[in-house]
Image 1 (cartoon, rainbow, N blue to C red):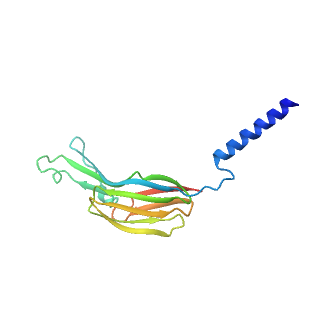
Image 2: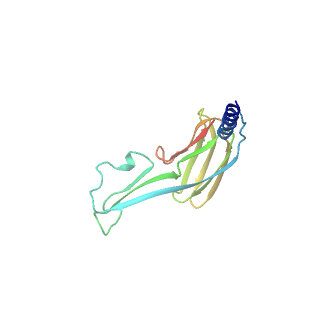
Image 3: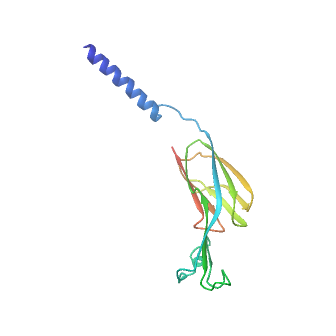
Length: 165
């Protein structure tokens, strides 16, 4: 009988520890969260392979292309391709978090940017310029994906913040 009581007590204690660790029955309050995001352009050049048949810039405003002969006047075979992005572009938070996006613009003269909530509403709109830091703050009051877009370099320049319930 004592073994059953000890086993049952142990089971109850372990169960409550597991439920507490998982947050069951506990109201989680939002935290202050800061994400450091770089606004960058990645470039690559080569003279070892043929240039693409389709101009990458025609596929997306987020791509750049300097064709052979244009990129390097001294080397008619050399060409360059580029793309803009937010780095990192996948972030995670919890509903109720007070989120600050601290962004530093490394490349691109202008980025007209906006943040869309999971319900499709616009949370914030702003313009960023090279060499400057921007802090955008909001409360993640909806679970789901918040998406940051750059109008100048869409659709390739975007980032997602997954907000967990």
